[in-house]
Each structure stands twice: as C-alpha cells, then as structure tokens.
Image (cartoon, rainbow, N blue to C red; front, side):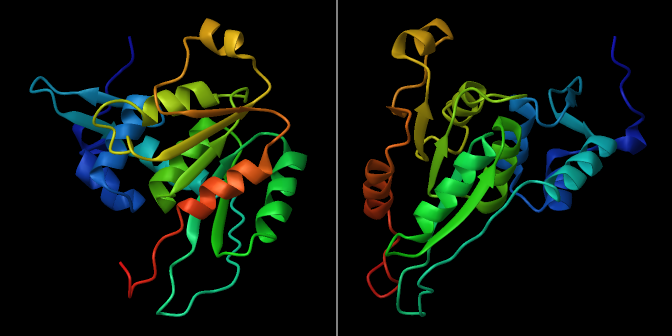
Length: 208
C-alpha cells in the first residue's frame, strides 16, 4: 500500500496550480491522467504530494519546446496560432518545424515527445490545435487524446489531429479514439494540416 505523505507535504489542487503556474482544472486533468499522483481525503478532496509538484516543475524545464513565431503580428493583427506537435521521432519533429516555418501566417510551434509531455505543454501554452502520433514511449497518444476528450476535461473543444502508422483496425483493437478526433495515416499530410491550421487562425483584435 502506498504510504500517504504527512499533511505538511501535501498540497491542494489550487496550491499546486499556483506553484506550477497553471489553472486548477489543468492540475485536475494531470491528476486524472496520472501526470500528478494524488490522494483523496475522506471528504473527497484531492491532495498532491509537494515532492510530485517539485518533480513536475523540474520536468517541465526539460520539455522540448521550439517556439517559432513567424510574420510577427502588430497590435492590430491576429496573435499567432498556437500549435503543439507531439511526436517521438526527432527527424519528423525537425521536418514539422521546417514545414511550419514556411507557412505564410503566424504560428507559435511547441513540441513534446510523448503524451505526458504533451499534457504538460497543453496546460502550459493552451494551444489552439494539437497534432499527435499514437505510438510513443511512456504515455502514448491514445491515452493523451482520451484524457483530453474526457467530459469536463476543459479541453473538449481542442482541435486534435492524429497522424499515425496504425490502421483503423489497429486503433479499434486498442480501444478506439474519442469522437471528433481527426485521423490521418502517415506519411504526414502537411497540406491538410496547414489547411486546418489556416482555418483556425485567431482573428485580429479589431475583428474579434
């Protein structure tokens, strides 16, 4: 049986959110997804070990991030589209970076190498769109997508695109994907992804 830390070593979800610099709902999502281990009190409240929060803070500092904002917008223009790519293939991540750099609209690109890092980055940057692989070490894309599409996750409307080498049958055998998840087969269909990203561009402040 796992030993519950002493009360002095436990934090509420609000305290953890303040320490991590994210919303309480993001902390709850991380707890439900296993990113942050937590305990429940007799009254049903979550308590998180301070050591787990400190560990996540340290891990966040090592998460791969390649912000690349092109065509920087003025105050009257739209902010960059926030795009997160979750992929464990370093060469493919580099290719994504080069392709996105060539798009003719502003994009802020972040990357992660597995579902765990993906959830951390989502809580940190609040992307408009996520492109993810499914087969990855640690927490895979299936687990990440299911966590994000869980009712009341706070991310139900996040645009999720899966690009995978798995067939539809393979995905079904692994429990399938939530409704509303866009699925493409590898090789990566960059034109289709660009078209979706273009349709999601935030409006300029004057038009919002």
